[in-house]
Image (cartoon, rainbow, N blue to C red; front, side):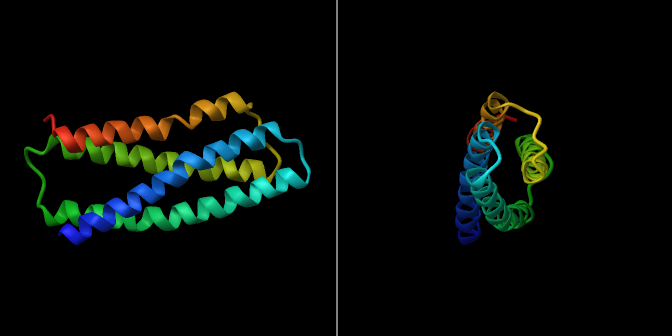
Length: 138
């Protein structure tokens, strides 16, 4: 199980790198007028999103493997809370796709300040998840 945990952490860390960087590209897209630079940024965002998704799949699969392998259930409230925040994180990942489609269609309606704040959500989710895993408060 230690190998599974090692690769789970590797994929989670890699996935989060993308979750931290993609909204920064959105900030730049929101400030860039249509043109060659805009198209380049959209291409970067598209490739990063695709790569993030490839990393998210084994992160989630290996996490479920760990969950089932350790037999966590009754009395493991911290794990259920963690799973809730992982579901929120998957929703955030999906929202990145919706935003990307808007930028691809040149239909963004939000300013760069929104994306600066939007970029903070995965940091907060990571902090909450780490606190739950390390401290196991309930």
